[in-house]
Image 1 (spheres, rainbow, N blue to C red):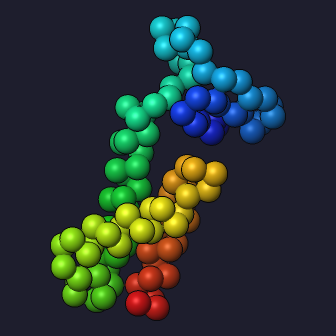
Image 2: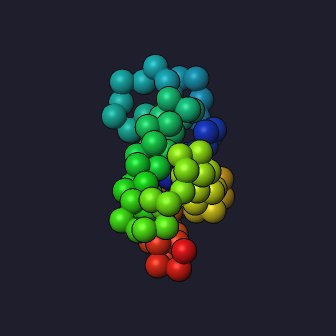
Length: 102
C-alpha cells in the first residue's frame, strides 16, 4: 500500500519516498501518484461517515444539537490525525471511546 500526502508519496514496503511531479498526473499507469483534495475529500468524508455511525449508537450523541454533532465529528477527526493525515481506525476508536465515557 502507499501512504499518500499532498506532495509526497511513501511506499512503506520498499522504504522509498518521492515527491509527486506534474508528469505523474498524466500517467496512465495504475501506480501513478494521486494527490490533492480531489483524492483526500472522499476519504475524509468516508471516515466522517463511519465516525458518525459509531457516535449514533450512543445516547450522548443523540442529545447534542446538529451544530454540536458536526463539531464533535470534526473534533474527533482532528484528534485522529497522525502527521497531518486522518487515521480512520483511530477516529472510529475515539468515537467509540467517547460513546463509552461520554
